[in-house]
View (cartoon, rainbow, N blue to C red):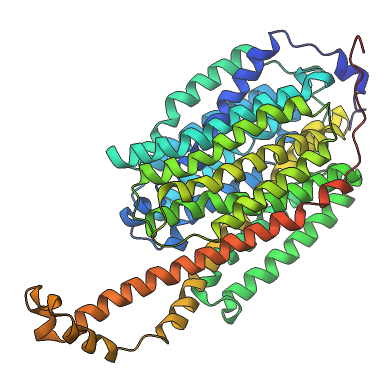
Length: 522
């Protein structure tokens, strides 16, 4: 490979256009991708009903997208260097637009999942490329501010995505949540073509791609994800298929790590993990995303399954969390150079843990604001986690490794979110069955005959209860029992998320304290 550029060469690069125009151009494309991630969450039950799928099968609409993200993200640095970052960015946007158009027209779940894979392949490269472009465009003393503005832009998706998705689903069809990406994507591609230009040190003379590494990664991640998605339905390790997927996936990932450490031109340069701060930040954000992605799917499901909300109301509940994130992001960028950013991450984990713990007190008759209020705390916590954590992690690597580090950082974060969704949804299904079995053991059917005779008002309902005994009441009791069992399963998931944040609270202090950039005049 050609000699790596130095920090001085990177610092001498100046964009030909205004740096904020470049920021807006790349953010528009990334916002589209983030919006599409959250916009589908509130429509999940409608997609399930329209395509005759179970809750775990409908979750494939989300996890297939995330898995495709995880597979393409490691290729981002190589493709950007080989084809040119600008050209590859535009191609990714157009592929995402094509996948969106086909997803909206999908006649069944299988085709929809395939189209979501196309979307994931296109959208996965946008976030690391946009981060790398911003870190290269802005000087070091403005990078924290740039990441804050980028983070605020990313919050437009969590804020507007669920509300927009709910409104579209209520008033039109879930298919339009994908069609809406077409005009946005075309606009973003046009702006990137005009304003973004590759720096001179992007091309590194790479002549080949590590196909073995790519296939081992795809096999490993794909098998593990299918195992997590189908494990609950097939009885986990009682199924030969699940056992086989687990063995193949585990062996594939181990072989992938060995291959990437030994090959001269790896598809994922795992050697950047020798940097302690970057390694800790990468592991940290992976675990955090396990909980964060979990809430993005659990909250809409709780609102619609338990509280009977429309997709619009469920989207509004989910969006309120993002207002807390906006508040914290506005402070995080300004505080980064004034206080120890590790303390901000610690504070963020503590606040997010408290918000998640409040969710463990949900009940079936809970009102709107008691569901939404803990989301504000989770949002505040996420802002204080991701802005300093991302800046700390990526700022610890050299400029020439920025594209590779950003791709790896986002890959493992995406995998963490995908695994979180799969595990928490599986636990939700199995937990509901366990709680239902326990609650059913405390129901005495003979009590309802006595209750029916002691309440004359019941006989006024058309005489059905009198003629048919307690069967109708038993049916109502069974439906309520299922509802309460599902609530208890949700609470179990919420507790696990809270424990994750509480355990992570002191871990950020293990990262190296960043060196301060001198400010002119001080």
